[in-house]
Image (cartoon, rainbow, N blue to C red):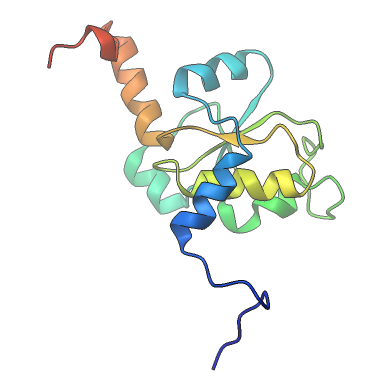
Length: 143
């Protein structure tokens, strides 16, 4: 029989945990993320290899899979990457923008205060790129 890890606090659903995580994030659209990247933000793709292979990749994204993200970006970790810094502007990318919110919130807990994620994830970014190459934006499209 499992015990509640937080005595006196009822269990929460994943939707509640996700909503709370997002209250601490300034989430960005693909266009905003791309603009931030042009000013030094690092796009971190946390999707597993099989998903990146099936769905595609962004050539400029730094790949750090979700299961090692905190260790690679925590400057105090022995396993950190050279880019790790508490002031690093990190924009986390997953497939649809759910796991990335939880991951960005976890990075903020480590003191990486500029961490956030992309609304809609890689799927939204891919759609945005397709619209850019077609010369249309969502507001220009007919219903």
